[in-house]
Amino acid sequence: MGIKVLTLVENSVTASPIPLLAEHGLSFLIEADNRKILFDTGQGLTILNNADSLGVDLSKVDTVILSHGHYDHSKGLKKLIERNTNFSLIGHPDIFDNKLIGLGGGYFPIGISENKDWFEQKGIKIILDNKSVEITPKIRTTGEIKMGTDFEEVEPMFFIGKQNEKIKDTMTDDKALIIDTEKGIVVIFGCAHRGPINTLNNVAEITGSKKIYAIMGGMHLLFSDENKLKKIFKSLKEFGIEKMIIGHCTGFGATAALVNEFGNKVMPNVVGNFIEF
Image (cartoon, rainbow, N blue to C red; front, side, top):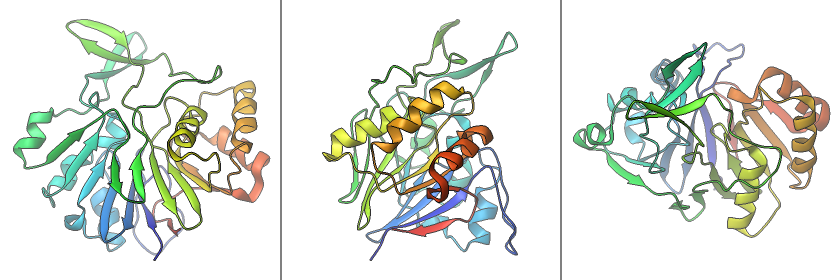
C-alpha cells in the first residue's frame, strides 16, 4: 500500500466544485502505516474548512511535525487543538523562539505566539530534537540542516528577539520530511529557509543515496536572482528528481523558471492536491 499525501493548506486553489480556500501557509496530511501525520498546519485561516471540505477527520491525526516556527506553518495548531489534543508535536528545540521579521524599520512577530507550556497544558506531547527523528519506518525528519553551499543563505530580514535586542535568526529550526516510498525518496520542504540544495544534501547524507524521486512544498526562492536560480537548478539536476510539486514561498518567477527548465516534471501545488507514492 502506498503513502498518501494530501495538501490541506497552500497559497493557491484551483477551479473545483469543492469549497476550498487558500492562504499564505502550508500543511500536508500524510497517511502511511495506519498513521495520520500533519506536516505543518498553516496559519489557521483555512485548515478546518479545507479538512471538512476534503473529508479529513482531524481528530484522527496522531502526529504533527513543524518544519519551523513561523506563523504560516504553526498558527493552525490552535485550530487543530479545537478538534484534537491527542497528538505528538515534533520540532526543533528552537521552534518556540521569539521570531521576528524586520520590515520598514520595524520588527513584527512571526513566530508561535504560545509557549511550550501552553501546549503541554492542553495535553499535547512535545518532542523537541535537533537530530533526525523517525516517525515511522518509512518517514523521518531531516533534523537540523547543515549549511554547505556557497549560494544559499537565510534571508537577512529574519530575527530573534532576546532581552530587548534583536539577533539574526539563522533558522536552525528549519527542517524537511523524508519519505521512503516504493517509487523512491520523497522530500517535503516547509520553506527550505536554509536552502533547498543544502536540505537535499542533508537528505542524501541521511539516506546514503543522492537519488531523489520527488520534492514537494515551499522552496523560498521568491527573492532569488537569476544567477542563484541557475546554480540551484544545476544542483537539482544532480539528484535526478522526477517530480517537483512546489508552491507556497517558492515565488511566481522562480516557479515559472522551474517550469522552463524542467518542463512537465514541475507541478505548481494547490489546496486539495492528492498524490499517492
